[in-house]
Length: 62
Image (tube, rainbow, N blue to C red; front, side, top):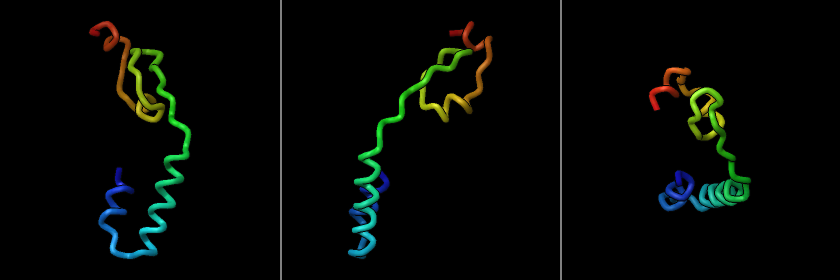
């Protein structure tokens, strides 16, 4: 989303070409699989699940 917005607002042809190349590279990347927290069962991106705050009590409250 940020790359597309930058492309539409860019005034430099050289920079626009670099942004378009970056966007093509991003679109070619494989999707990131979602994972489940083994403690509370929350599902999300691996880096967010790794950093989220959970406890065994939070699972009991769901």
